[in-house]
Image (cartoon, rainbow, N blue to C red; front, side):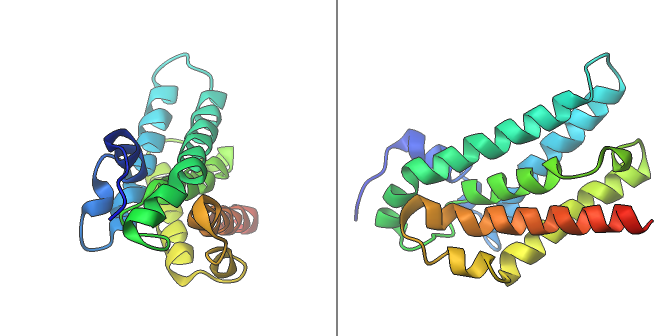
Length: 168
């Protein structure tokens, strides 16, 4: 069995969440939503500008995307093709969905909670179902194959949220 450094494994498994069963991808998506919710609360109780939320979501998506691209091939060598232990891709995809939430839906109270829950469930549904082109992306070798299906799932979840906001 190939080895992978402990530091890389920590980031790829999001500090061990990728080893949780069942549904490691669901566990791996949750920290992004919790961080997004905490950021929204922080924005509303401080003078921190609202764009800080978008910057943090974009940085989260970028960081976990880089983790997958740079170390995904190592993870596949150790655990197999698009391994369930790697949930950094779920974090990146979930951050994409959260980044796409329209500002009008990031108010206070129940509407924000429902929006965050909707973002979580939409991303997970698209990640599990893998409609085209997300499913085709898994065939790409290495870290890009680990990552891209989740980025597309995240974008699809964000698009649905935009459509919901638009028709309201």
